Amino acid sequence: MLPVLQVGPLAIQLPGLLLLAGVWLGASLVEKQAPRLKIPAAALNNMIFLALVLGLISARLWYALRYLSVYLENPLSLLALNPTTLAPAEGALTGMLAALIYAQRKRLPLWGTLDALAPGLAAFSLAVGFSHLASGDAFGAPADLPWSIELWGARRHPSQIYEILLAGLVFAVILEARLHAPFPGFLFLGWMVLTAASRLSLEAFRGDSVVVLGAVRLAQLISLGLLLAALLGLHLRARQTVRHPS
Amino acid sequence: MKSLVNDWVARPGRWFPVMAVTLGLGLAWVWASAVPAAATTGGLIPSPREGFLAPDFTLELLGGGEVTLSELRGKGVVINLWASWCPPCRAEMPAIQRVYEKSKGRGLEVLAVNTTFQDSERAAAGFIQELGLTFPVPLDRTGAVSRQYQLRALPSTFFVDRKGIIRKVIIGGPMSEATIQTAVEEILEEGG
Image (cartoon, rainbow over all chains, first blue to last red; front, side):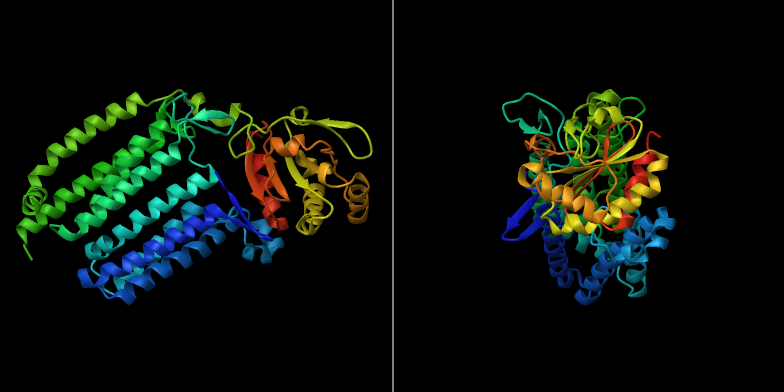
């Protein structure tokens, strides 16, 4: 765990830096997919940029809305460079909505665009794993194994290492599958299947799960749902390709 | 090999058995990895991070007396680690003071832990007087509390709810008044 990298007088927050590197790597990978999928690279880039910027701004605004009276007294705090005063889920949804609207206006093909995003998303997931390793977030359940690590007051599963290994594997598979996808949508839905399956398996070793119904890990239920939805998507895409071969 | 894979995945009917097997295995795995709710909430283990119990300490106060964190259960507690020579600490103290004055009636306590082992009591006292701060200032003379809280950068601020669980950690500063106030709202409402 190395949350703060001290370079002279600068205290660099390593987890954030790693996420930023993930965004950059992901975006440049997406751009490279454009010619093969016959999508204008500029439109794709603009879409990602728009989603990121609007996502970030709206995450702060949604947060401020929760504590409206505080921000009305100190409106300048809207500009504070503090990542803890963001509403991440609401921001992400707003960013995605913005991307969707932009894609429709530019008449980008839905499945082709999603396929172009898949390698970038896989690269970003890998960066998230490294960021968790740096911050010690997404930590493992207490366990006494030869490869356990000492973290947050207990010997635990090195869940961040598991996450990096599986995300690396998914990334490699997606890069390879890119070259022989049988129909549009295959790559994105395949990424969704692999990522949901990873979370479903790895959540079992986490020590910070949200538990519902007395004993069930919520993230596993959501992952299983998404996994089945992606498989259904693959079925539907395959059926459409059989009926209307392009 | 390539066309074999392509043929396989391109047949729509092939996906139904895959879905059935996934559903079966998935549910079995969810069942196998189920845990009692108490096992995953880090709340019972003391550790200086979100979701965990705030590590307990007893320290002498500047100007006499002492304070024990666990005796403040029922109140929301802001623990701010600072030093008199740290400019961002100086910059955020007036905002902490304003939030303290505004919210102490609703059960807010502020412990501005001076990292005395790397500061001096005299400088700390001068700093408090100069800025007109009225909350208690525990003195970490040995550095034990800074180690307990894995102090990495000054200032570091821990927002502890009424049950003694850390709800937010802000490393570095200065924090704006709105940042402090919203975090205080979170710890005062949870378990309130």
